[in-house]
Image 1 (cartoon, rainbow, N blue to C red):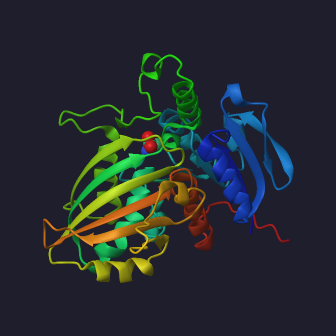
Image 2 (image 1 turned 90 degrees about the vertical axis):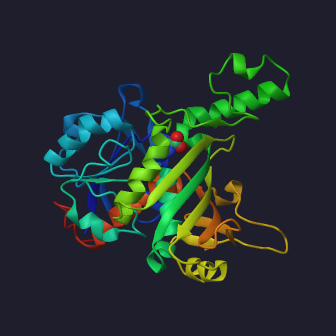
Length: 344
Ligand code: 2RA
């Protein structure tokens, strides 16, 4: 079987990664449409040795589509995802638009693949920080339920889009050349700087990015009583997020046991060279499918606490790869409506 696929937001950092992964993972595509804003229409992007045209999104574009991979922001998804579903497609949406909708499964294939079967046309891809963290924490949670989770994130510029990745390079060279202080030009100067994630704050002083980790993790784990707090920070790294995670269990969870569990966990690569003091670094996570986990150690302030450090490619496993893996799950379970049975 092969499928008619549309990528909504094809020219963005995640959209281009989706295109690359569809090709590299030999996803069974019979027809591919690249959709973006009017502004980007007319460009071409490479796929399977051809240069495919980027079209402006329209109702017509979803006709006969079996699968839509959307990564164009929440308002675009709110406008177009229901239309694509009405046209008979399944939409895997990378925006936050539908993630907390009880009708919409929020899926990390290594954690809750079974949730995908309940889709009613839309499946939501979790936020990148949530995906990376749940891939590493779920295997431990299955052994001993996590009571409390404290996350501190070190988020790459890619999370703010391709433009932000360019800006940090411009800022860095401006600083190195001694030009006008970047703080006078950019509201959130990132080169040689960090800043608390600048999404809107709630009445408790938590930003939306932090509340995504709290709320999405509870939905994915199916556990509303796990206590979670997060501090999300943007750092001058290009493409991979890092996270310091502190876990509290009901009973002690030894680092050795955690190491044994994580060394066999899907989507996880244990990176720990204690002698060389070498542990995951974002620059080593970039371009990889796995979440790199290391520096697993007893929390010395809490006998039931465990500390770990992780790095993961925000554009890949943090967004595009997770969405493609959900699509592969749908194909494997024949959950893609209207699949075109094309015999080769
Ligand atoms: C960020 N998680 O890194 C957001 C992007 N999806 O800002």
